[in-house]
Every structure is written in C-alpha cells, then in structure tokens.
Length: 358
Image 1 (cartoon, rainbow, N blue to C red):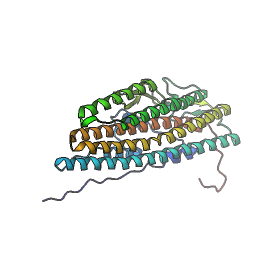
Image 2 (tube, rainbow, N blue to C red):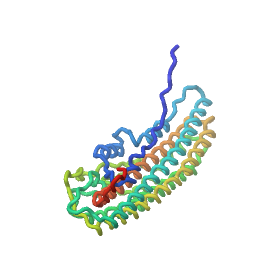
Image 3 (cartoon, one colour):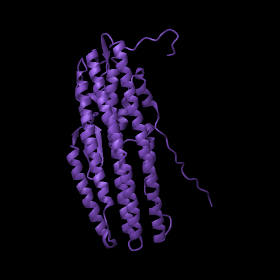
Image 4 (cartoon, rainbow, N blue to C red):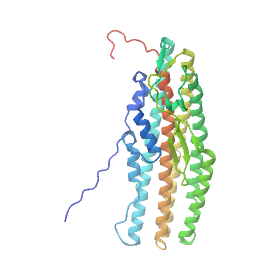
C-alpha cells in the first residue's frame, strides 16, 4: 500500500507592487506590455493566471466541484454539503480581499494624485516635450497616436467614470436581481425538469437584461466587451489599438495636467464607490448558496440527481459572477492608472536636497 500526499493549497496574496507604484509617482507607474497582454488573455479565458492573479486562481481551484468517493445518497449529500460550505467560506475570502485590495489601490491613487497636484503648484511642469509612458494605450483607447498635448485625457478619463457608473453599477444591479431570483426558486415535487426550467428562465432573463447594459463593442481600457450565452463577460484587446509607440512625446502645460488630475480624482471616487457596492453582493450570494443547500437536502432522498443539478447550477452562477467582477475591476483600475501615468511624467519633480535619502 502506498501513501499519497495531498496537493499543497496555498494563497499568493496580492503584492504591494502596484500600490507602491501608485503611491510613489517617481516610479513611473508603468505597466509592462506583457502584463497588458496577460490580462487580455485572461479576459478571453485563454491565458494562464499568475502573479497578482494568484488569489483568483486559488478561488477557482477551491470552487470546483468535489468528486464523491463514497457510494449511496448519504455520501452524495455529504459531498454536496461539504462543497457548498467550502464555497461559502471562499466567497467570504474573495470579497474581503476584493474590498481590501482595490480600496488600497483607490487610496494609493488618491495619494499619488494629491502629491502630483502639490508638486505641480510648487515646481510646475517639465520644460520641453515629455515622453508618453508605455501604458498610455489603456487610457488613449483609440487607433493611431495621441496628439502633442494631453487635453484628450480629460475626456477619456470622464468616459471611464461614465462606464463605471452605467456599465459597472448596471452589471451589479442585474447580477443582484438574478441571484435573488435564483434564491427564491422553489422546485415542485422534487422533479429535475422543473428545476431546469426555472433556472433556464432566470438565466435567459439575466442575459437579456445584461445585454441592455453591456453593448458588444469597444469599451474603455483598450478592450472590447461582450456577453456570452451564460452571462460571462468576455474582454478582448480592441482591434486597431496598437501598443505604445516608442519615443512618442507631448508638450506639457500646467492647465492640461491640472485638468487631467482633477478628472482622475473624480473617476477614482467612482471606482471606490463601485468597489464598495460590489461587496454588497457577498450576502446575496451566500444566502443563495445556503438556500441551494437547503433545497438540495430536501430533494436528496427522493431525487439525488436533482439536488446535485441544483447545487451545480448555483455554483456555476457564483463562479461566473466572481470572474465578471474581477474583469470589470481590472479594466477600470488599469484605465485610471494609465491616465495617472500620463500626468505623472509631465510633472517636474523637485530636486533632492543635499544629504536627503533617495
């Protein structure tokens, strides 16, 4: 007989790299092209999850269905119960991380913006032309090259704020309505067919409502957004938007940079509000999982297949919701961070005093 060793389960917590960069504008606030492509691949479902996405990988690994290893209805029910209980705990971890991580990003962006505004008053913008940062395409969000001034940043960052309020919060409402409807479903006489009909009707209504909020096509952040038949948001790199053009420069003005920083502050407030609103989904999802567990237990004796189907459907709903939340949060933050990078390179940093630590 051989001993087996269970796979290690661990969590790579999000690193503070991006938060540090946002709080220290001297760093340049640059996202690498490979990172941009990695996220684009992830949105499309073709990329590997790594680095700062490792916590999300942990969630997906732990939210998978647990395969029963015992026979009989009692074993099936215990497996269902164990799987849902584990999922509930990981949902709580996910939203705790979501709020902590993105609230920290929002706060760091606020601090960086305030610092740049103060330095701008004291020192002003750099003389001559300044080079665009490598991550400018995420806020430029259009074919071709941006012009020799950054007046366009004000307009584009305002579009990000509008997307947060209309698309982001619209998605939250659609999802909450959908999950609450699933939570209220009752399965008549323990018949699997009844459960399938009710879930399918709720799903169809959700995807229809979602299609009214999210129009297929170019979105902010350099991505094209669409909704698949199961309600999953699919984000792909927008065709025609090229990578950063090396050596591209613009002429900085105090008024232009001030306008950009003001718009960034406003969009960042919208981002913080959206993050807070998303966390309200935790209780809704946990309630739905608890309800699924209750209904599954009632059906398990008479129709174990129906109980398993119900819980599998509910877990799929939650999995899709978590993926969509992560997608939207990343798109919005990347666009805001890109705008901050554009403003950052224009501000002429004060020189270090003699003996001051670098």
